[in-house]
Structures are given as C-alpha cells and as structure tokens.
Image (tube, helix red, strand yellow):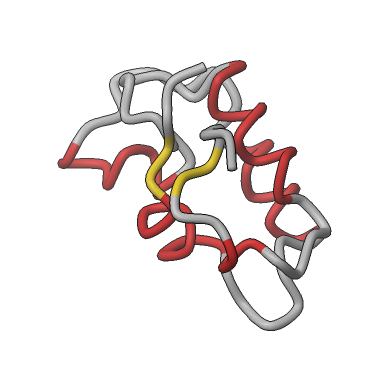
Length: 81
C-alpha cells in the first residue's frame, strides 16, 4: 500500500469524533473517480495516495481510520509502528 501522510488525511477527516459515517458517505461519492489532481483538490481530498484515482489504496487507508478517534496518534497511515 502507498503511504498516506497523516497531515493530508487529517486535513480531510480528523476531528474529535474521528472518521464518521458522514465521511464514509462523502468518500463513497468519489469512489473510482479519476483525473484527481490539484485542480480538483485530489477529488476533494478523497484520493488519499494522490494517484489520480480514488481506489482500493485510498479505501484501505480510509477504512483503517474509519470510526477510530485515535487517528492523530500516528505519523503515517499504513506505516508500521
């Protein structure tokens, strides 16, 4: 899996209540969108690995923090502690 910087992830999803069902719904609206780049703010921040497509790598990073309030505790999502 590509590493996803926590700062990028937190810029979109980190709040005291963690990643919620609302975030999941918003993520789903961009599922398999392509041409994600600076002009689209990487599909409104849902292209977490900045690959240009909202796909399985992004879902893996997202799901790892979904409903988890401790997202701020790691420096990189997908990196081992």
